[in-house]
Length: 114
Length: 109
Image (cartoon, rainbow over all chains, first blue to last red; front, side, top):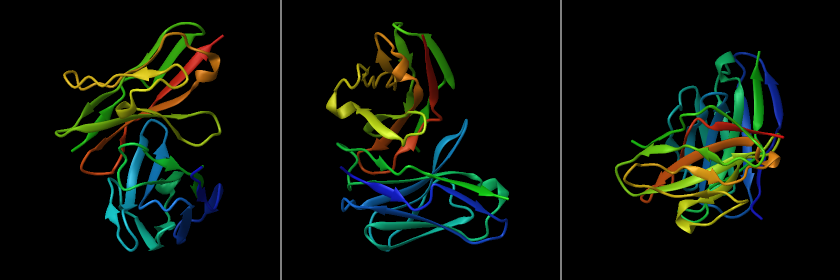
């Protein structure tokens, strides 16, 4: 069974702090993704990576960056947290093609910026 | 650009009634369509994918390319079907999933 593990379930940070959200998958998936989930807005893609050290912007990358130094780990970085980044953050991974398997999601990190 | 529209934010039905969650998409190529479900306090999980033409937990979904739709259907809803449902699309040439805004299904006893 594929496991996608997000290091924190809940986080509370102050405005202006640098925040790191960590995600690890254990099935050798090539692709990893960061989404944020907001009521009424669904899931919006922040960044994704299809290989180590590779990254691509999603639909809402502003205020975020990512790091993928190892295949199994994908980190989301909030350079200077703001209150409008309060959200549920979901990490996902997949094989190179989504055709047959879709994504596997982590359980999410609920971030509150105060 | 790829886009997914779920026109209903909320859908409420009674147990045993048929349910249909609507999904329309916009994509210029050949799409891959999925339905994901999130039960209360659980992680988002894949419910079904159009390519496999399967029925999961009594749910089915048919891709209608003419109407660009991928509606999710179940003939007899159960209380345990209450959840948030997301329709999602990716292209055959890419692996980025675009999600709709979701429909919260409530099945009343």
